[in-house]
Length: 301
Ligand code: CIZ
Ligand code: SF4
Image (cartoon, rainbow, N blue to C red; front, side, top):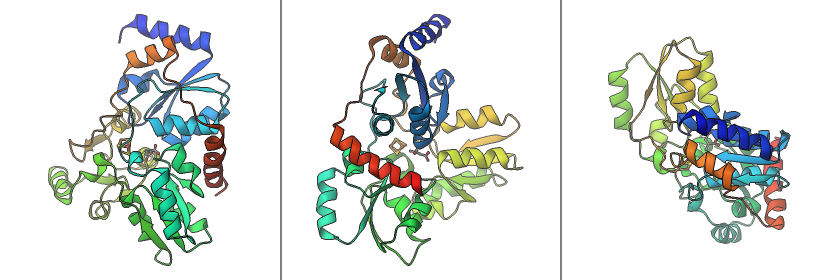
C-alpha cells in the first residue's frame, strides 16, 4: 500500500464522515488502517456509539450485519461482498424454525456468528467471551444452541444441569486442528503457554492452559508474565499480539489456521469501499428489530 492510497483513504474518510473498524483476524495492513481493532461484538458496539455516518467494516458478512442491526441509521459497508463465514451459513432461519417446532420448550441461543435472519429467530445472542454467562442467565433448562457445536459443547461441559441441543455447525479454520497438531506444537515449544479458541474441537480445547475469545486471548497474553505462547486461533491475531508484546514470542498452533474469508479484505478494498461507497449492508426493518432483541438481551446479561 503506498502513501498516496493512505492519503486518499484519509480524505474519503473525512468527506464521508466515515470510520474504519477491523476484526482481529484481518490482515496487518487493514488493521493498521483501522480506527479500532477488536472482536465482532466490541466493534459493533463501538459502531453504535461513535459519531460517524459511514462504517467501513473490515471483517465478514455477519459482523457487518451485527453493526447494522445495532446502528440501523448508519451506512455500513463491507469492502468485500463475498467475505462470508462458512460457519454462519451452517444454519438458516428455516432450519431453526423447524428445530424450534421439535423443541418448543427450549430457549434459542445463537452465537454472534450467524445471519441477521437467524438472530431474528433467536431469544438471545452470545459471543465466545460471554457464552457461559448468557447460558447461565437463561431460566430454561433446555437450550437450542446454533450454529457452533464446539463452542456449545465447551459450554455444555460447564453447565451439566442444562440440556443443550448441539447444532452441526463448525468453523472450518478451527475445526481442522487436531490433537496431534497440539502435541507437535508442544514438542517444538515445550515451555510455551497454550491459548485456545473455543471454536476448536473439545479434545483440543481440553489441552489448553487458557480458553477464550480473540479479545480474551489478547488480554491474557498482555497480562501474563510468560514469554512464549502457542496461539490456537486464526493467524490474523498475531499482528496485534506481536505489536503489543515485543518482548514475547507467539507461535501459531497450526499453519492451517487461516480463514480465507478474513483474508479477502485488503487496503485496496478499503479504498474502493470508501470511493464507491460499497458494499452496503441492507436489512429489512422487521429483521433488524427482531435481531436487535436478541443482541440487546445479551447486552443486559
Ligand atoms: O466474535 C468474534 O469476533 C469472533 C468470531 C471471534 C472471537 O473470538 O472474537
Ligand atoms: Fe467464520 Fe471461522 Fe472465518 Fe471466523 S474464522 S469468520 S468462524 S470461518
